[in-house]
Amino acid sequence: MRTTLTIDDNIARQLKAIVHRSGKSFKAVVNEALRAGIENNRIAAAARPYRLEPVAMGEVVGPFDLDKALRLADQLEDEEVAREIQLRK
Image (cartoon, rainbow, N blue to C red; front, side, top):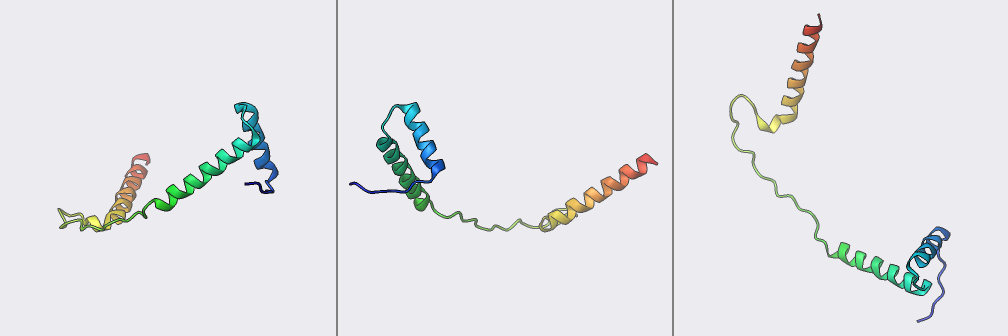
């Protein structure tokens, strides 16, 4: 099929560089690029959305509530900073 396309200058330069390196015709390079783009789109459309199933973290073990892990990390970091300050004195 014959058709007229307007190709962005930077894309045309890239296509011509591929033509030069590969020794293929401009038509062949454009068709390969279009096929690759269409195939890539098909693969992306076929990909299933990522789903994460939540799970319970279990019972609290010891003095640490794992549901509050960030709070625990902050507390441990604060204690370490305070310890380092004490060592500098």
